[in-house]
Image (cartoon, rainbow, N blue to C red; front, side):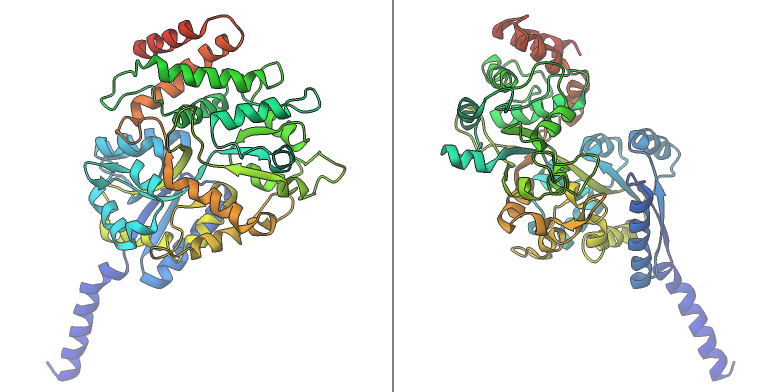
Length: 446
């Protein structure tokens, strides 16, 4: 064999040995299945391939089907490498063996745990490991008329007492309601508000060991507060539609809403126009609005924020090395495209690429939001407002999350026991004591 032949054979052998490292293909299941979001995710996959040589096959999966499909794929030994999922799937997927906690923990440690908001990481912990990597989330907001509060000399609504005091000062129906809350029991919105308020009061219906919480004193505090805000609301079956419409019309002093309201307040969505004056595109109401992400109950506590967080899980069947590289890429070079799918509902769980850095938050605030018109959040809200909104993720929580009882808590949420009984209490059909006892009994029966 001459020298050239030896060299050529060596190159061929080297290429054969190296090709799996630079030409692997992984599969990514995503719940972000809207066409414009699929396009952005494909852009991330293309950029990842350009940088690493690895191909990512992006497969849309409807959110309501993700658990069923993942379970079937696990049984068949055919899981995707990376799985996009919600906070509700965290521990069930991990306990079923669908996720690889070691791979997720490696990614978080590589990126730096101190670059992530604490709340989403804490929700993903099990037995000392991170079972899945948080990518984005949102915290529910107490939305209030900052201008009216300032005129009346009121404190920002960060506690139950602040809110009830503000109701007394600002409630003047029908021109303005002190609060507009949910009373329609078959709407998810009412249970979201109940869970948020319960977290603020330090109450969860499920104990750390999975048993039903029988602390009626804490539960009654939740019930009394919910009745107070319901009494300050219009009559009827209320859900998200009425609370949004009345606030945008200037007829509500306070509501609790998701951050999807952020672009609507800025006059960027024709289907939800600002009607407080004659200009549906006005940003004046946005400027007169304050937001509270962390609020607390009657007694002293640190408060809480209700959050919805999304994760990228590396599965048990994954090419874990390449899957880990891809997840890291999404949360760094690809983060702008990822958050840009819906910035008003995708707060950055990483504020920057090192502890104390806020470059990703700054990038996020410059992303366009809106439907019929576009504008960056940073053009609508002051930086201090943006900082406060994102900071809520640091203490983000859900029933059962910290104790590994999310699955049990989810059953309670889906059963809507608290919605049903609270509505009876609001309407005067049951007493406070009887309402608390009924909730506990019905939770036990689930």
